[in-house]
Length: 312
Image (cartoon, rainbow, N blue to C red; front, side, top):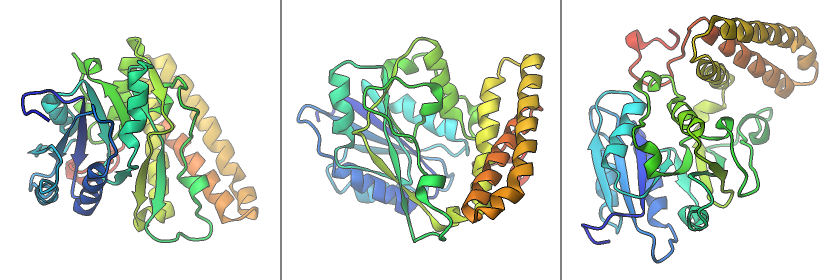
C-alpha cells in the first residue's frame, strides 16, 4: 500500500502481557486471504508500561504486515483502545483480542457485507479453543459457547463486543471508549450502546470467524464465578446509567428474587450432577452481580485497580 494512501481497514489491537497470544494473532493476520482491492493497517497498543509487546511486533515486521506499535502506560483498556483509534486512518475499524486468532477468511467474510452496504457495524462468531482437555463436567457448549445467528441478522446491544467486530470509522466521530469502564470491562458495550441509540445499524456476519484460546486457569469454577458475577454487574450498570432510583429498586428486587430462587434450587441441581450444579451456581452469581450494581458496586477486571482490589 502507498504510504500516503489511507487503508480500507484499521485493525486495532489492545494488548497486555500476552506475548504468545499476540504473536499467534499477528501470524493469523499475516495469513489473511484478502480481496485484491482491500488494504490494511494494524495498530498494536501495548497497555503495559514496560512495553513488553514490542518484541512480538518487531518479529511480525519481518513479514509483509503494515503494523505500528505504540504504548499506553496507563493501565486502562478504554484508554488503550482510544489510543488505537487516534492513529486509525481506515474507513473501517476492526477489533480483535490478543488471545484470539482469525480464520484466514475473517476479513474477507466481513468485506462482502461492507460492499453490500448492509450496515454500520458487523460482528462475528468467537469460537473457543481449549489449551488442554477440561474436567468431564466442564463442556464448551454449556460454559463457553456464544450464540450464532444467520448472516444479515440485525443485532441488539446484548449481541455485540470488540472481541470480533468491524465498525464504520465515522461512528467514532465525537465518540470514544469511556475510561470510567476501562478497568471493569464493558467499555465496548457502553460505547456500542450509544451508537445504537443514535440510529446505527449492527449486523451479524457468521462468515467472519475468530478463535479464542481458553487457558487452563479459566477451566476452574472460581474463574467462571468471577466472569458470571462481572457479567451481571456490567449489564445492570449499563441499564442503570440514568441514575433513577425507581429503576435501581426494580432491578434490585428482580435480582434478589432470582438469586433467592436459584440458591434454593442448588440442592436439587446437585442431584443432577456437577454440571447442573455449576450452571445453577453461575446463574445465581450473575444475579448477585446485578444486585451489587444496583447499589453502585463495580467489579475491577483489568490490572491497575486501586490497592489491587477486585470489587469496589
